[in-house]
Length: 355
Image (cartoon, rainbow, N blue to C red):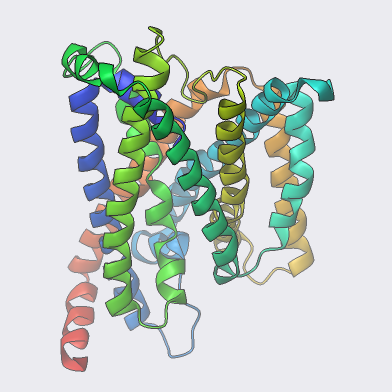
């Protein structure tokens, strides 16, 4: 969410709004394709078999290529996101808590310690509480950003009139960022769908509510953040990882709320990464081995956040590539393969007979 003002600046006000809405609609459609493929594959499985996750789904329909490509996409997007979160949290803790006399790199390493608890999460349904708390923190962050923008509302009309429809010099960066924040709603679809009591009825409604809710939230933060922290002070929003807040009490509270939201985002993001790798390459391995690998991944995450300069520039490119592969390319190929094999036809016929 913090990247949205930078996204809007890079895209241009009106093109940025239109393209983000389009990308959300396409991501929601991709989630529905995942559901259809998931039901087609599980329709052919024996009763009581474990329902496949996203990576296993791609493997079932596209073979080894689909499995490797899916894991590549998830590692680029999810692990890259976690590194960016870690770096962002560390840098801002150093800025807003100077009395601790700790550098951003030190903070980044320190916060990986409590994040090691994510290595022991085994069930996505157990994360409902942390997800809800993260949602509340994100909403409070958005409210503070909007409140600061409203206080300068008299100049908003001038802002809207002065902005270019599209900013051609940086629109390609914006398009990568727009795609970057969508993969979670697609990759976690098999896990969420499988955990629901009545998924055939409940999931489409939940997907619609999620798409509308997050589109509105992201766009409100994008417009309000760019207006308040870019147009009003007369500066460019240059970074995809921070708004460059001044250290005022209100801004400190705003940043702290966003840091809390990021911290509570780690469990589901890492869960998706871990489950994808383990289902593909560590099936049947002891729990101790799998948890040891998870701990190593989290520790490496902190190390990369400290060692790699300007990681955000890499993230904008790699995230856009990984998400485009995972959301658009692989899913369409999987749907075509399922259709050619008659799986989607069989699944839909079964669904019609059951209703």
